[in-house]
Image (cartoon, rainbow, N blue to C red; front, side, top):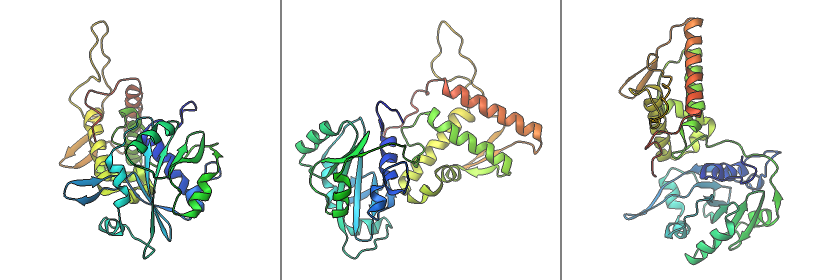
Amino acid sequence: MNQELPFSDHREMMNAVLGLAYNLRSYPNHLHKAGYRISRIEPRFKLDVSQTLNPDIIFMSNDHVLIAECKSAAIKSGKNIKNYGNITERHLSEKGIDIIAENPLFDVAIFGNSNIKTLTYILKKNGVSYPQVEIDKIIQKKFGNAFKDTDLESLFSKAVIIKGKPPNIIKFDNNSTPEDIAPYVIQDLMQRVELKRTVFKTRDLAKEIFEAAWDDLDETFKDELRKKIDKFLRTYCKTTTNKIGKKSRRRKVKKMPKLDKYLSKNDDIWTINVKDHWKSKDAFRKDCIELMKYIKRSPARKGWIDSR
């Protein structure tokens, strides 16, 4: 976490809000105290033929549903957010989200960092008056209507200093850089060699990397992560090119360490080909480490980040 600007990108803000549902000593646990659990991350609801809504997180307690939208430094607000209030039990059921209460109360909340004042101004212009919570160096509801859940209203009304970091639940997303992704994917490959689980699909890697949170992810988001991992493997591990980034006229571009001799792919199934001998395993591990170092000091290749 950057101490000068905490939660400065969308993934960090997502983790900051998700962390509120955990019972951690070093981080605020407002949602846990109010009885909420994570129900779905990055769901997509089709309200009608022409409109799909994509709130960031759905939390649920015994009697309430909380729809959370996370806003980092990049502020965008349109009519879609205003329509989050139109999400009903039927839409949750269609996504396979279990509802405990027969007629739960729905809250929609906007979470922002130091941008909260500007964000509030934009939301107000668009007719949005949901509760707006600052989650920066402190956490507190600053603007908007009261929560329908009185427990949430009470908890978020008090300013609480954030002393620790939230759990790293969303390890990376569709906008993450190769440097963000490399440690998770390459370390998983090394572990697979040690455990002799060398045949896999990219979905298997994604599930292992995201651990328990995988079951809370929407299927569309899971597919995006699978494609991102596959793209990483094709671009940085099993690639026909030796270079990352643009060639400089003045200096020679250093060749990228590759894992071509170890990796093969047939349709959507990948195989790591390493002999079951300590020397072969050690050579693979060293090549993996060199590749991670190279990616860390090299710019992302053009076209790496996909628009969502």
